[in-house]
Image (cartoon, rainbow, N blue to C red):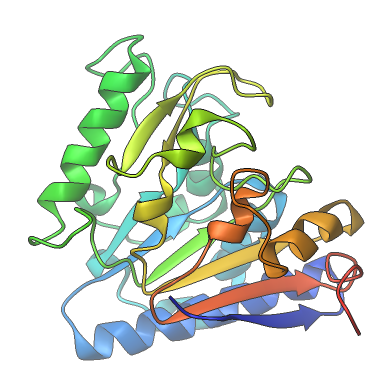
Length: 251
């Protein structure tokens, strides 16, 4: 696993613009070398602000978006189109504005999906979709080119919360999460092994409320207590922060 690198931006707006520029550049680079690229999206204010900045960038058309696979790190187990779903936010911020291939947009299905109210079955379905795209890799997920993560004030990533069983999952790549301390209580999440299979993991954080979580992640805290500490990419791990989110780090 790679050692984290910290990049600090003056404020949240410039952070979003910086993440957008970095994502566009990375996808252009990957698509110049291979037929397809893959990115894992995150929700939250910083993640969606970055996607909106991609949509607003004149450079966005440098990416052949029809060759990009979009996945999610987690999802609230709510019906399609619900405004609280990460998918809904991503579509409004970016996906509806670019020429994506619908078959390459891999959503985590909610209770209106084929598995109904069974979040565990929906998570297993997502794990099977990941495995089908994994080309025999272990763990059975694609080699994500970029996996973006927000981080909560409690140091959670995706829907992996401190002290919950899902943080310790070592076999499965996607799980149902029940009893989330943050509403809604039922979610679907990638697991730590799936996250750590990515080539690059980007932890994106803005605001003073995230400063302690960022510090814990970089200090090598116990992932059971600070799941963000488990966020590492194979080739690169980037903490993309604004000044407030970086305020608890050594100068």
